Amino acid sequence: MTGDSKEKQNAEQVEKTRQPILKTLRVENLNDLVRKGLDLGYRVFAPVKDDRLVTFEQISSPEEAFLDGITSRTSPKSVLFPRTERIFSYKIRKDEIVVEDNADISQPTMIFGCRPCDAASFPIMDRLFQWDYQDRFWIERRKGMVIIAVSCLDCDDACFCTSVGLAPDSTEGSDILLTLVSRDQYLAEVMTEKGEDFAEKTGLFDEAGADLDKETATKAVREKLGKKFDLDKIKPWLDENYEHEFWAEVTRMCIGCGICTYVCPTCHCFDLVDEAHYDGGAKIKNWDACQFAAFTVHASGHNPRPDQISRHRQRIMHKYKYYPDNLGAVLCTGCGRCVRHCPMEVNLIRILKGISDMEKAGVGEE
Image (cartoon, rainbow, N blue to C red; front, top):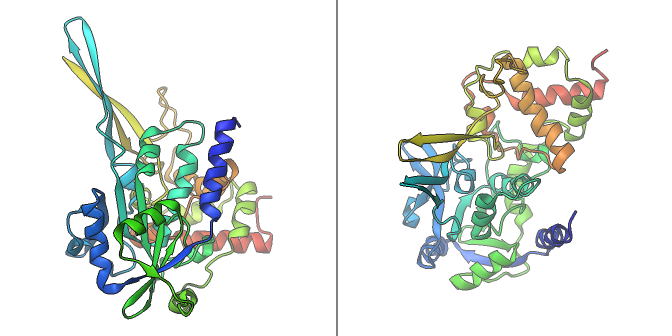
């Protein structure tokens, strides 16, 4: 590791481990928080409801934000990692080629109203986009981003954040975490320098008293969530059971639609496409998915993952074995979107519970 890399890692660790500054925000000032962000020149993204569909979109007024419900269908990862974007384009003019860079990617951005499971996805993804290659698109957007998350006070059967080391009031990844502790007041945990700077600029936060209890506010949802599997048992079983018949049993219903990867806050597969015209062209980055049949097809026609069982196994192995092996973090925050929105009811919680139970029972390949 280079000196610069060590310095950067140390700075990130300090940011991660600093003690939160406790403040309060009155419920009546919540909309003013968004207005202030807009006034300060931030692009603001928040959950937006259209009929029954809740997605993460850019908003121009606080009234557009929808903070009820469990989670949005889509995650805020597209703010940093768009579904499709132009890396660069070029024009052919007589005897020269003129290259045009992407538009400004360092605009100040505020993510407002995401849940802790979504906020926690960003530091997990930071590891990837700053690993063997420094992805300037992710890094520059990340520098100008402030994340204001809101603790969960309810959950459904698809939620499992507590099973992957998080919680409905986890501060991981948030610059400011808001928890509703009374009818008229949020406890605001200011976790980073960016969050502190933003809070000061708004002038809307007050110092917190000693009587505010976040644990009591989120106790009911914690008890409802419980623990759905033993995370410590997952990777040891995956390490030894690549060819186990269990994979065919639990993933044969998968149809390869890819919705689990597209709604996931931590899936990050993408493809690069060259679009050429008679007088120029562009290189485009598009979301892709390991669940698609053509994802690993070689130029020869050979496909090392020839069926949907092997492709679904890859997704689970990536999240719970390969990513921890390479980058030291589970590639999952327990948001439950893959469970909630799978059209074939392929249930990741059930799969992980089965793996956990087999490891405890000593069941594996012979």
